Image 1 (tube, rainbow, N blue to C red):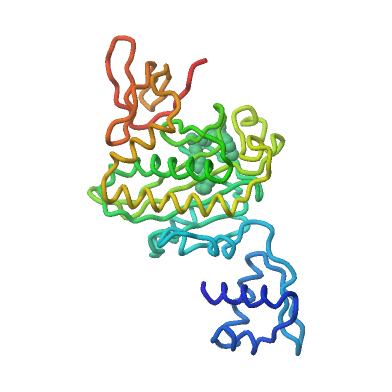
Image 2 (image 1 turned 60 degrees about the vertical axis):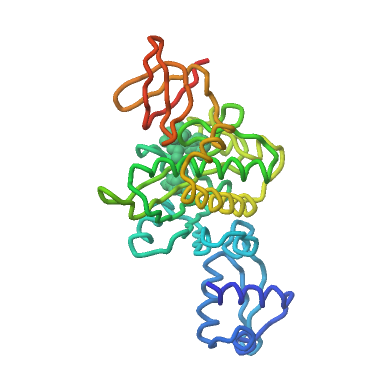
Amino acid sequence: SSIKKQLYEALANADGNYLSGQALANIIGCSRTAIWKHIEELRKSGFELEAVRKKGYRLISKPAHLSEHDILFGLATKTIGRSFHYYDSVESTQTIAHKAAREGAPEGTVIIAGEQTGGKGRMSRPWHSSKQKGIWMSMIVRPKLPPERAPQFTLITAIACARAIEEVTGLEPHIKWPNDILYKGKKLTGILTELQGEADKVNFLIIGIGMNVNQTKDDFPEEVKERATSLEIESGNSVSKTKVVQNILKYFEKYYNLYMEKGFAPLKIMWESYAAGIGKPIIARTLNGEISGIALGITDEGILKVEDQDGNIHHIYSADIEFPS
Ligand code: BTX
């Protein structure tokens, strides 16, 4: 909230000196009760604050991890991320976002967590979300569109993530249809788009992004160690999660607006510039079986086209893709 942000600014500007509740109330223009309440809020977000009778409040340290404040300070968006909730530890940011959306959370609301104890991928597969090492977040959007357009949001989000990675680290990632971002074939990021809608319209989408940022190889569990990587492993430096989040939100807003205005065509071109495996042999595992062939590209709807060895062209709506070696 804006009181919380102003409170943080006032305490940060005080340079470790005490400010009384009344002084803070005067600076911000609110009641002392509101100050007290927002001091508690700051504590919950990981700020260490000292309260001394007759002296007031003093900022001892701000959280070393992602914080709403740091993210909001440098955020260049109009709607995406303007409503923002950080949690230290949750089961899954998707679950929290679904609940918030049902309760009316506005377009662009972002839920972000330091750690997920039950992070999930597609088809209820686990998503490892180790503490403070990555970006675990969900965005709520409410586009006025029919539900069949929802899968395109996975592709739009992938472009935004790839762009943000490039901008912050200089690495050049690839997108593997539909929902993975890879670097040298290893998984950096997974995207999970969930839909709440009716037959003819989307009520809301929850777009989950799990991005590995500062893990070392040993931070990954055995089952994914060989197939996963992080920005730190690939760039050789520790990477600011705050900056990456700010950039994901910035590019997502930009591409989302472009999409609502001009449709998927301009995004398709961008998507193709990042795509891995187009023109190459792939195996697509769908719920109805396996299709092997050459990936031709995507349609204007974002559907994958694969040509099998008999020359039949298959339209694939959802699958796990493997690049045979
Ligand atoms: P997916 O089904 O395409 O990928 C899941 C698979 O990826 C797992 O079965 C495992 O093999 C592998 N995997 C698990 N964790 C990691 C990891 N940290 N890095 C690389 N590979 C891994 C991908 O689903 C979609 C993931 C979305 C995650 C976000 S995090 C914020 C939001 N909350 C939530 O619970 N999910 C989303």
